[in-house]
Length: 212
Image (cartoon, rainbow, N blue to C red):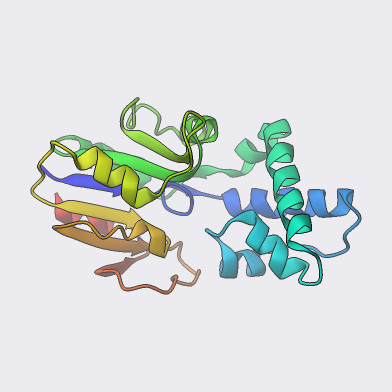
């Protein structure tokens, strides 16, 4: 049996970047800033913390301002969940690919968001039944200090043995360096691959099925 390790944002979903732009621009306007985010900027910064994107938009503001805007954007998202769900959708072929893998293999989901947010995101795209309790992990779990994707995976592997570990995600942080692993760097068609050295670069999640 193999273990497939999935990222969420930018990999199993599509459309959320539109929400990020809308949320950021609403918070910028509400706080008196004329700068505006757009999809081009997000293409170059997607996967980074929101404070880093605010740094790109407002280079002359302080770090404290960038952090405060990030907090306000997260709060705004929680207060306007309908905005999140109207854009986010399952990525092309994701549900079919996950279902086929689940027939004979193990798979987990690790995302750099809060636990409650991850649960809501999974429900929004219909993967919550594929990743039940114990199969999804949030880097920012409310019950403990923030950790890393690598530490989460290493903890999950304790006492387990797999024929192979396959990592799939859209950022360098998803290419988790554990023994006997293969790494698929995914990006939506038309967008730019992030800088790293995966084993494969793909635009179609069905390519991962060659591993089963």
